[in-house]
Image (tube, rainbow, N blue to C red; front, side):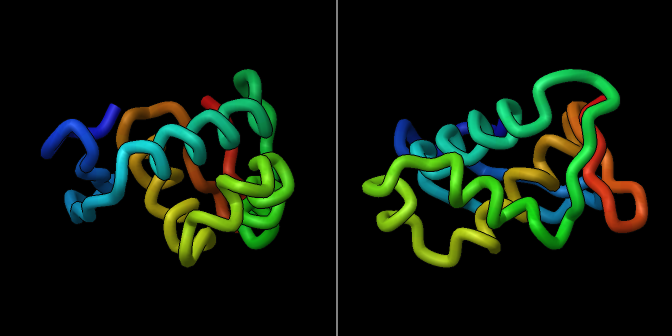
Length: 96
């Protein structure tokens, strides 16, 4: 899980050590969607369409509330990569 900055803000990290902050509910909604899209080890999705699949997975209110969804999905995916939950292999994201 990302490091809590406050109750409402978390700090995501990339495998290379970069960080960004986002609202906790953004992070949790996107993380839940990613883990449901890639439910078990070995399941993969194409990187370029992952944010579209997350968008389709989120409810309308959540989807419309998150600005720059593709950017947020990329950072949550990087955080999951840093945790060892997912990995990127060329054009695919793979659940470990």
